[in-house]
Amino acid sequence: MQSLQELTLHEAAAAVRGGDISAERLTQSYVERIEKRGRELGAFLAFDRDDALEQARAVDRARAAGKQLGALAGVPMGLKDNLCMRGLPTTCASKILEGYRPPYEAHVVERLREAGAVLIGKLNMDEFAMGSSNETSAYGVVRNPWDRERAPGGSSGGSAAATAARLVLGALGSDTGGSVRQPAAFCGVTAMKPTYGRVSRYGVVAFASSLDQVGPITRTARDTAAVLSVIAGRDERDPTSSTQPVLDYASACGEPIGGLRVGVVREALEGCDPDVVASIERAIAALRDAGCDVVDVQLPNAKHALAVYYIIAPAEASSNLARFDGMRYGPRVSASDLRETYARTRREGFGPEVRRRIMLGTYALSAGYYDAFYIKASKVRTLIRRDYEQAFTRCDVILTPTSPTAAFKLGEVKDPLAMYKQDIFTLPAPLAGVPALSMPSGLSRERLPLGLQLEAAPFKEDVLVRVAHALEQRIGLLPAPASFES
Image (cartoon, rainbow, N blue to C red):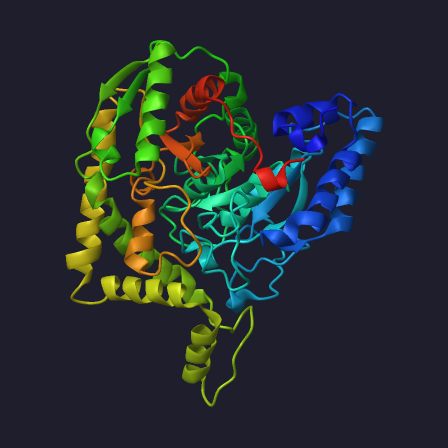
């Protein structure tokens, strides 16, 4: 008999709606798994067993009463800890927000509740979403379920690790420079950064406001599509959210991909691990066999994305994080005067990576350097966006690796600049505002997951899940990590 942990998100939701299993039984199985296996990974920062089961019972009562159930009814899901949710703390994995309980919920959390999802807990992350390994969390590292000596990626490492280990059926993360896609690649799951504005940022603790976007992390392209259909759409509380119509993204899964043009950035393969290159070549061959036209494309200014991102993102973070001073919420470190109170609270509340980025951003915005750094970076950002516009006249999707390597060992990457380079392939898409999806492309010789990235023109998320689903049928999904098999 198939275990409940083997069900995909859309299979579980269909089984609950059809009455084949109860939401309570499904949630109970995940609650027990979290209690038994959750501490091994450090993925959860907050977990409320009783509330999760009560949410599930409410779904069962609604079904018994003959009410129409939502698209995600009874599905246990986790939330990255920078998404505001009533009832549980929202700390952004930082001491400066320790114990903070928001009085409202993020728009995406409201949407999940309306769809009947069971929100099972808050997931660990790099502090304020700043990191690529989930080692900057103030509450301990997250471990990769494929090898607990390795990083799960970041900053949504808890969301990816929990999904891969079958502790949740899916999770929401946030992506500023690759923070759902890179951990998805490291943990062998699927994740999408939607087009900027496709999903409301209301109730998401801001890192870099012109880049941040909430995205789903699930096991399959169809599951990612199902969650995106729920959370996408206009929200009047976020003026940057788009009025573009929300599609039934899941219906795109299964549509033929023959005739689609796939652009390959050959330069992106230079310097990658040989296993990564081999997995990309296998995916290209599979797409050709499916009838796709494979063409070479260039993104000449993408090589500047790393420098551009680490000027723009820290500059915006410098402004956004100014509000965390111990005056309105979070712990306060008392001192002899107000200035020292501010200084000590921020010095003791923020970790070293957050302080580093605040300093970088403040410097870039300071008098005498604003034009030389921030304005120049903004101009190059425009060039990157134009490169994508040009590329999409020649292709429907662009294929690159998600990361140049498989997951590295915890503590292995000590140089901040070397850590920043882990996001070299994921940074251009948010700078250009285009959607991007990461999916598993196979295993390395060390039996670690590898990932490939698909990018499309703005609001073409349906094309991404369509191609990703077709690739899944040809190259296969990854199993559960051996030590976490059901």
